[in-house]
Image (tube, rainbow, N blue to C red; front, top):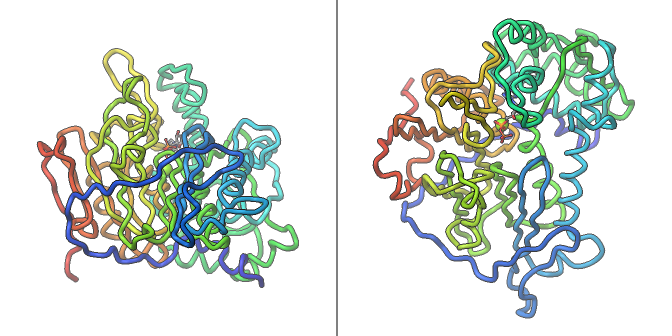
Length: 442
Ligand code: ADP
Ligand code: MG
């Protein structure tokens, strides 16, 4: 078995305990900022020997503004294909492979197979496997089959409408991740999950082990079947997955200090070149007006990246290294009608946009896919269930705990104990009460 296969299905790595540091609101200015676009990323400076130089690309993909900033000797970025350009290409290829509308994408093929089994590649299998496990662990708060409902509300086209209950109930008949059948959810993964869930039933041999399952990568034996009228959409986890793959690529190319910022999905590699933590701005979850919707906090030297695609202010700064910081917010895509706010995150239990008082949820853990999935799922769960989930996740040997920061409409900021010393609230949010959740002693 090669290394790649060994790691397949192991997106959830061991958590890194966040370093406890004194919390001083230091906005460390970055020097030599400049923006470059694909193709042809370039670094700044370059004439002072081996001092790490800043290299950055900015581009638009997966429907959002993205940037990758990496530090290192110029030699790492020289030559034929710069690692940053390669990372940009990787993200674009993931985007086209995961597109729900592109007829050439793997997802499109799965969705249009009229209930038949579709062979898929090992990478898609890995992503689907992790996504399905998280659908199950979150008890369907995350459900990768919710697409037809998202589409009915107009969130896929921007032509918004309010479907009536009859229409929603009809669509909900085809929303259930447990009806997906795969050849690759193995017994060992299944037994790691405490609940017996039909979604995780393999269509392969029941005696199959995880290593058997992943040795199928070479023989092209991965397959998936979704029922007629069901549709998969990996929008809630795609950016997290892309951030994880990008980090793998950059590390392989020798980069040990970088921030990958994929529209609110931040993945940090190592520390800043001086060994200090990265400063990640947590967006104020308010509706950005047109002229303040550009993320320029890092250009102003306020932070290294912002955990939101369209921030219009900041609720605070979080210091991290070697971690992911992913935000889901009801303010990112929404419409208003009759004075009511309808956001793009749907409760799969009702088919309605989530309306539970949460404005945004930021999840902090090592793995970006996990953070992306959980930020969407905790948003759906609401404050109480989210807290319960967080408490139980520590005992889950695949998730192994995580931290989160939740901002609610009644001016509360709820944070978990792991980030108390690394989160600094912005003065503009000083009117918010801060609650800290602690794990209970056994
Ligand atoms: P964003 O993509 O804006 O960063 P999320 O990661 O929270 O935000 O993903 C939201 C997207 O996922 C929606 O635009 C929609 O396509 C899809 N989606 C909405 N609700 C759910 C849900 N409960 N489970 C899975 N996917 C969802
Ligand atoms: Mg998400």
